Length: 196
Image: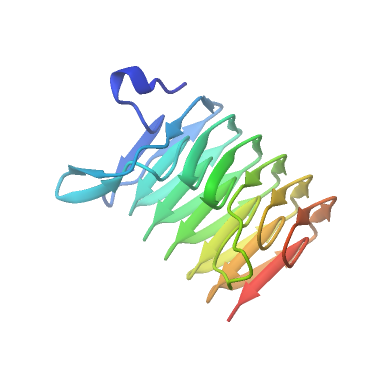
């Protein structure tokens, strides 16, 4: 699946509501959530600048064996999720870019399990000019929620501000058996930056 802004498809995958979605073995690429504003789906305001690859509001969502790459957004280049549950399993999340937060993912008030993935070459371009976060998160920015990050390879991600790999804000985080190397941030937290 790939995006096409010519037909107003800012998000390649859009999920809204309590049912959630489940995808197995898909490639999600070419999303361009780079326009400000919103539209409504079932009474929920959807941010056009969030979630180039995947944009989720609520629901229990699972992505298994998916390739999520080459998406761009202001926040959540690969995946943006608000007030949801996300299971990202056995996939590759790579080469996604954001102008603000969460190159690979931006999870807001969301609980997640991120397990057995390759998460690499994601970028957050936002430069803080010395102000404090929650900015950056080359691979991911996690704001609130509980997150189990297990047995992933998280490498070569970059943030122009905080958290080359991970930025967290008031989130509960379990990091276990991950490879986290060659991540870089221009300001603080080459691998991780936390606000608590």
